Image (cartoon, rainbow, N blue to C red; front, side):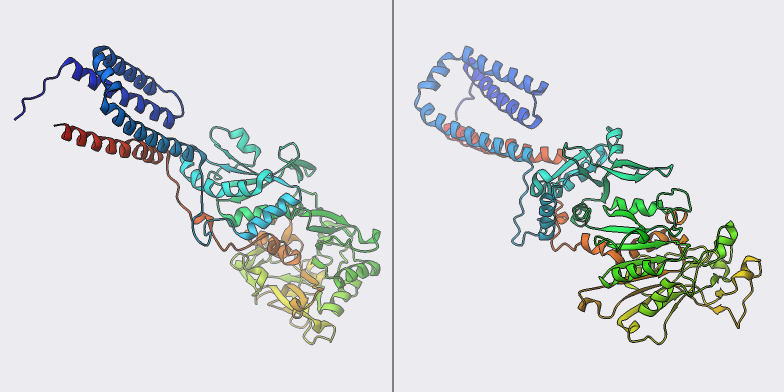
Length: 567
């Protein structure tokens, strides 16, 4: 049995050299992980230098033997190769960690952007648009930001100069967040802004609180980090200018710039916010409806259209135009306000006659009176509509009541002529079975409200209808018409607080213009399914295992084998 080895000066010096070398390696790894020279790095360098210096001073003969001896010639090579290999692994890990490299290794590219998304990005760049996707993430949502960044990096890489991505902490940068439209509850969501040539958000027209047209930055709310919403936002920007809605003027229509409750400025804001151009149209001053009109809307006209104006509307519809008419009952509001009587769509008016002869629909000279208490919004002539007919454009409205004021009933032909039979008439809105249509409007103005079975119209009453061609998909020219017997339905007072009215407006607009179909798509793949996102602590743990524990275990095993064989 060998006697126990005594700890000599040379042995202690050798261990000091080993500790010094390990301290230097630890300091280098800490510096790589921390990306700066910390106090820990400085301490490791001091310990390492002191340990090696102590070994060189206390055991100079061991140093000379180590440098010149046979073990050094072979052992040093092994040590150097091991050190280079470990260093290469550590350096490669740090580079990959800092670069945030993402690769889709699935055979079908399940976690990559869809082809329609890439087409939208190419279209965006081809039209010269530059956008910035702005994400709001506080410190509490940093892990969620890392997960979102996996998707956003793909947009940035595919878009090049056309797409920028920026993250803002709304708690640390509230002023910057407000500039991009941040509101409480938006933490963890994204906004899209359109950039000018100088890289700053591009201004757009907007309606101010005083009703004046002003400027603000273009921002579009995207929601969370998913490809459907982000690409829909990009398509909205790419489609800017491709859609244009005209509002008729010159007949007492509702004021598009009026921010009061009776105005319709919120319609302008909703269109403008989606990148849809808005313009006024006086049919008396033009030879035809402009060719760039995606739709023409008549909202609350009081004076009837002349025969020449009706001819221009008819020519527009024959070209495949889209027309929306929102008409109020005659006489009523005029009598209340003391203004001249409302003659729009009277029984013998040119426009009402055209609607009947061509499409088989018309407005009646009557007023809806609602007698069901739960459907009365304060007065019998302020009915709440909750009978919504099955229709492709009414899916969002189905469960939401719609508020109205002074509603005009409509009529659909029962026996269509050959001309009328070219179209499909689809009811939209009905009143309740307990309502009726007051035809003696002068009696209503004088305060006499009673159902006359011989003259008044029994409920339920049709108050909203759409018209389109039979087998529309087989025709190249596809005119569409929406007729609703109320213009108050879209005034600011209702669209700012009644969800059903808002949904009705957006669905009707989409049905007329096709805007929703142009900017939405269904992704085949879903990059948001990739949830491989780890926190900073987890990444540091992986780094320690990769660069310290695994190489250390190999070195320790080698040391044990060397020590055992030396015995």
